[in-house]
Amino acid sequence: MDRPAAGASYQRFPRVKIRELKDDYAKFELRDTDASMANALRRVMIAEVPTVAIDLVEIEVNSSVLNDEFIAHRLGLIPLTSAAAMQMRFSRDCDACDGDGSCEYCSVEFNLSARATDSDQTLEVTSNDLRSADPKVCPVDQARAYQQALSSGDYDPNAGDQRQLAYCIFVADLRGILIVKLRRGQELRLRAIARKGIGKDHAKWSPAATVTFMYEPDIRINEELMDTLTLDEKRSWVESSPTKVFELDPVTQQVTVIDAEAYTYDEEVIKAAEAMGKPGLVEINAKEDSFIFTVETTGAIAAYELIMNAITVLRQKLDAVRLQDDDGDLGELGAHLGGP
Image (tube, rainbow, N blue to C red; front, side, top):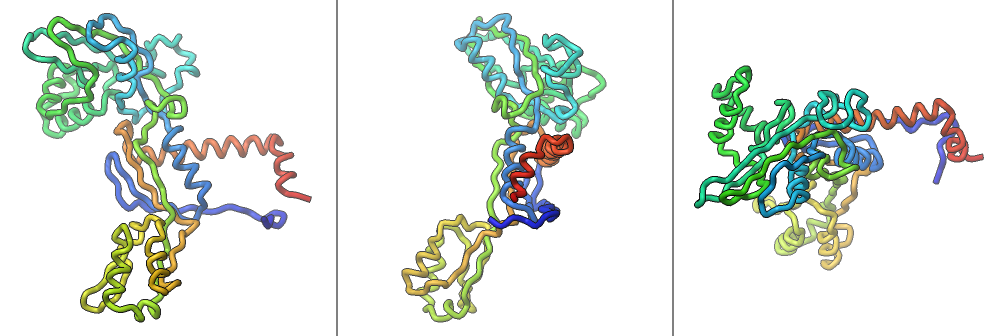
């Protein structure tokens, strides 16, 4: 591998272009960088952007069919709104409390109380039955119902009436995430503490449902070779692609690329061209400095916040490396990479 001349810089200026943006979904382009930066951004989004999740559960009464540990695990996997997570403290770093949950800086307390009294009906205990001490941190289902109620004018946030909020959840027809089912006489009563964490420690803190990226394909058709094919051969070649990348125009009888990003690097069209005795009919290369990201969140934070928070965390990590370099900790590594 060729090494850069002394004083040469690897500095690049990546560009991001948003293609599609929703509350829990984003699709964007990342250009003018390499795979190491793209993969670093992906891994940070999955494992190092902090969120809030239930981490401690104190069961007072549990006469359901599920044991305490099972219920605690299910509670931990309920996504909570975490827009304020970046400003919260990690409980291990908080000097304002002893970790019992009664701290405005590092934790949020939840309570749940449910009892089945109807002999004919099974009571479903869901995330909508959790009551948060901090309205900014609640199950994502409650947050959606809350926003719908605010927009419709059915809920007054200054009233602080939990019954009114419960009615809004009912009207919004949001069932919530099922925790346990109770039959007549069974009861569940508990206290839970939610804390800040990252997906690297436990998957319940990961804000991402999926984060994927692909190299942007560069597809070029050899028009001279394509013109030597018959109409049936062109149709057969277009249909050899498992995904709809190419299209045969019925009027001009020309083959065109209609969706390059649908190509999955399966090489089926290349094999089909070789089988027809037309190697080089199409040339497909991956652009090594251009990536297409698809991001889906759990609802804990918006997709836009996930991307921006990931960039912030990545910059913090790079700043930490830069500070180590300034202190001379990386001097030997730099000398090794520089060579003789």
